[in-house]
Image (cartoon, rainbow, N blue to C red; front, side, top):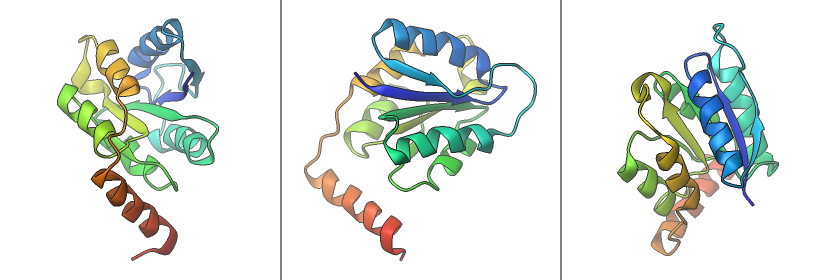
Length: 149
């Protein structure tokens, strides 16, 4: 069972609550890292908690929601071993997993609206990394994290 660290800022809290419950119902272990209200918060605070859990191995994957998904991805990618990407549709979700082994999905709360994203998230969770030539590229990213330039 995958352990999912899940967080949002105030712009994604409604979507997070619904999606978190859907993931629990689908058999995933979900850690709700907040926020829990619609009061304005700073997205880096939530992204840090989720990214640290993924980076340290306390969660297998992370899901973050902010207005565009971009800010959360920027923060999450500061942590070793985290590969975060904002994804908006099925193609981005599938390729983020198959080619890039993305372990933190960043969703755009302002762009999703009331559209159902449950299937999009489940697709991301169920898509395997292809490995092969893509592993070589992921290894190069890991080398950059360890050694810089």
